[in-house]
Image 1 (cartoon, rainbow, N blue to C red):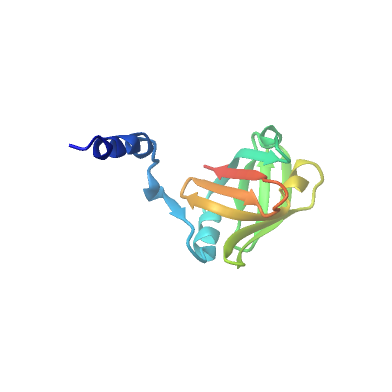
Image 2: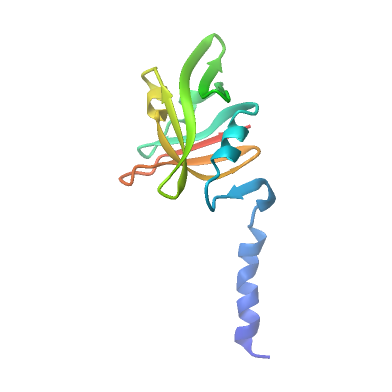
Length: 142
């Protein structure tokens, strides 16, 4: 047997073993606005990770629970603190995007942006900033 034929399949083993369960994720191939809008409006979301300008800003959102309504309102609640904003999902230039806008300054101001939807599933939404000059990352989870 040719040694090259044996080496190639063995080289794939680490990649196959590291694959996540893809059944729960939607790999974006087109306009997913309705599907994502419905998912956001179902239940509570928390910030699992937030990177802004290369710095981890996730701690600023610890304890906040996000609620997205079907009417385009978003609220972030933590104890007696409440932040209000708006949201919408749209399809532009071949990409599904989430736009959020908050009235407050501080960490919520940094979340006010148009975010590319990289992937999403029932328990996780992975977003990246639409700014080509930097990569900001926002992950919501349940």
